[in-house]
Image (cartoon, rainbow, N blue to C red; front, side):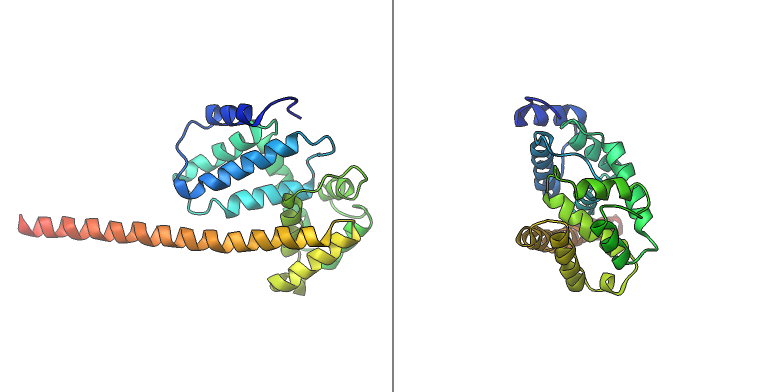
Length: 226
């Protein structure tokens, strides 16, 4: 999508579009997504589809929890996309539309839509699922996360249990031609990293709260002395 653009070109474009300092806790996430999108932009068989869009938005949202200032999140997402030739607003709209479309349906419904290559699914899911089951489909870990996220949106007993839901994702993935070992690895890493990130954010918030209490105590002590 971006021709002969190098990773250095993408990074330069990113920093031009997003001229802010990224907090240290979130730099790795931003860098990994930038590189991942850069590589995908050079894949001739890659096209944006519903599962990819949902997966990208889910990963970005999950790994930027606690980001401050919060009003920089939209520009950050847009910059990560635009520096690699993608339209962040279009991807967000596709992800939101797909998540909304699956609400009120069961896991079995989604499974049937995938088996039938999108037939019977509401838009924009129908077109996206058709692409996923096509011969020219290019897999990425964001597709695995997108499938997991959409199934968790569906109303079914499997959605209440992450372990059971993962098994369902693996089963459905195999049925539509995705590698089970690859799905297991990608989802396993995603869930593991998600837990680590949640712990890091919690620690950061506790540290900030402790520092805030310390400043308030020092301020109160100074006021008492005066």
